[in-house]
Amino acid sequence: MARLRVGILISGRGSNMRALIDAARDPGYPAEIAIVVSNVAGAGGLAVASAAGIKTATVDHKAFAGREAFELALDATLREADVGLVCLAGFMRLLTAGFVGKWHDRMLNIHPSLLPAFPGLDTHARALAEGVKIAGCTVHFVRPKMDAGPIVGQAAVPVLPDDDEAALAARILAAEHALYPAALRLVASGQARVIGEKVQIGSGTPAAAMLLNPPVD
Ligand code: GRF
Image (cartoon, rainbow, N blue to C red; front, side):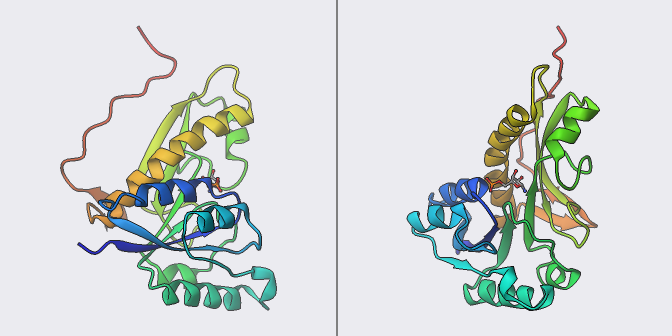
């Protein structure tokens, strides 16, 4: 079966991008990474992608008169690479409804919280400030509203008593690296589909165990 061609958009170090590239090395994985595009020239992730033999491009938002001109160039770059699905992976530009509409149900994002809790920035600090006992990350289809849209999957991690922002971020990031390839697999294989603004997952998905924190004897 033909693999789904995926374009990854990044702005920074690209550790989630790397997790997706690594997963797609398996010829049995239902997606292949066709291109990595950064809006930041010299973003660390570009070198990582190049070293892995992936085509890269920079579409620098600062080089365009406005958001729409930038997005037209971004869209053209993705289409030239014959991309069928876009994965945002630490892409730090808000996208207009026009661009999001062009990729409706064909664009995923990963966010370091259990959405709909803590959308936006500073998620780890806010989770710590609220004293939540379980944190995590979410992969969702992108809609015009920031950090909202049908949820493909979530991974939960405990918040431990001595956590600071860095410790919690590292624990969540490790979960992100497991969740994003798993979620993309479900979408690319057609097992996860948006129906009525919720994602339905095909049968055969094993039920997860309950995560209880603090643990109860
Ligand atoms: C991740 O925490 C992701 O959830 C958020 O931005 C961060 C990107 O990290 N959207 P990386 O560039 O993938 O390492």
